[in-house]
Image (cartoon, one colour):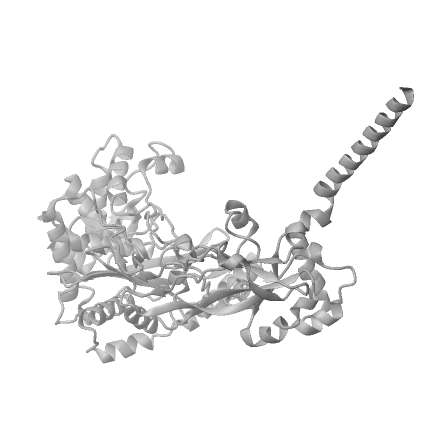
Length: 636
């Protein structure tokens, strides 16, 4: 009995040892973890074709081209792996081999990851036939973006490799080496463009060579290509605007006021999305980031500018809506608006004559709108904060001071101050209308984006409402009104808008836009000359003004609303106004009759001014105040 007990005890111990060993082997040993990889079945992930991108007229802008990539499962590499022979085959240095292998190991020893990306078909053919010799390596086929255009990166965006955050966020879809939309349409519509991955199973022989499909393809999952997207952009108009913007910094936005579809969204200088395709994309990105001209900044939606005199339209509308003026209110201008020892000068050329709001818009009278704004702020004499807040709410209902909830990935709110803002800045009851009078002419703390100005033009065309500006018209040819609901401003009286629009028409008849009037199309517009400064040693240094213009046309049945901002372009009537009128003429007539004006705008080259400003900013950053003050830069 005693011996029998010892026998069973020994048997139990041996069984326990075997059980523990089996547990260790299965759970902790690489060999058995990788059992799935050591079978004769290859699992191939099929990357679907990314959806194409077209313009509104079905012109192809973005498509795909096939490439091959080597993938590696680090743990499967044998100890006697011939690194030198492998590097000669694929055409890389040993240092690159170990660098890429370490990157793959840091991702996962057991999961496949990209080892060499973007291999052309011609080169891959010679690699593929010998790849079976190198255990742990395999290949996959995918497509990368091919842009048929060389601009509009702010619209189209570009794709790049997924980050760890992307993988963590969607680990069930992305893996290292995958591509994802980084900006623009490519980013916002990523899930629509990317499609759905598929899986193919293959049988391999003992050398790893594929010999047949597995189980008659019954286990395969078909990849689903991404959906095609049709933009609201008119590519012919986009290219025409880019032509006009050569050697100029700034933005042009054109919108159809009838539905909010963005017809053109140009940010200058332009960037080529093809720079972000291929092995040098990282190098190109760093180069563009350091470029002083900031070509990757979407000036149409991200850059903030003082709206200058274009903002007078809102000051006038606010005054009418708040009841502090009416369309018969007149003010006489005496070379500007005086307050204390200061003066806002006026260059309207109509001095000493009482003028109404229509004429004031046409000639851009600073005094008129300063008087209106003073009345707005003093509507509640004992509560200026309430007056400013009421005015601010009206302005914000026009889309300023907040982001549009649309399909543009780059956005900026801009600034529309409130009474509470000034209480915080100056202290309660320590400010008055004169303190903030510069708001009356679109300067001061007010900042807006070009797309917000274009939307203002849409609201004027529609007499009080707008459709959210958006960039995609349809998906897979199914016309979808994503943003069909009209948004109404707080100003709803058509009579007020009629007065403002009449003044905007007079801009071309007797006002600041008469030099570039186009007789065949009734246009309504407004010039703006935005003062521009840099600060150094607590002093303001004046730079050339920004040229601004907004427009809609034809007045009787508006088809297009436009905003133009030309950095350091001078008066609004210098470049921005003529440029906007040419864009309207091109879109409505599909032709330009004013060839001389077109040539003048195309040849307007501001690069020398930009170079001078860049030198000034460099000096500002590099030198002390004495060195900077002694150094003089000629801007013109």
